[in-house]
Image (cartoon, helix red, strand yellow):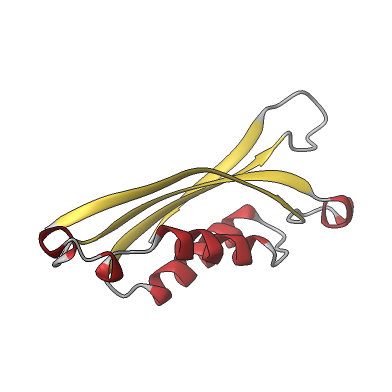
Length: 117
């Protein structure tokens, strides 16, 4: 049996961007994950040690956000890879990375990408 875990509205200050200024001054980013994983004995045994640990997932995302990249596509790809590497029971991770108030020359709330892997 499969189940889904969602971590939503994780917000970070980070230095991702294609412009040098973005990599110097930074910006705010919002990350959301949907993780599909095998249930195994987690529910039946109430076995938290067999579950995907939400704190560990958050810490993985936080670490990936600290590694500056030029594209948010790369950031999302790195998050997916790191989460799946740490938890082999995961079937799929959907990751949305949004740059809040991007410097596009006008008023815009966010720009985001979503990757699945």
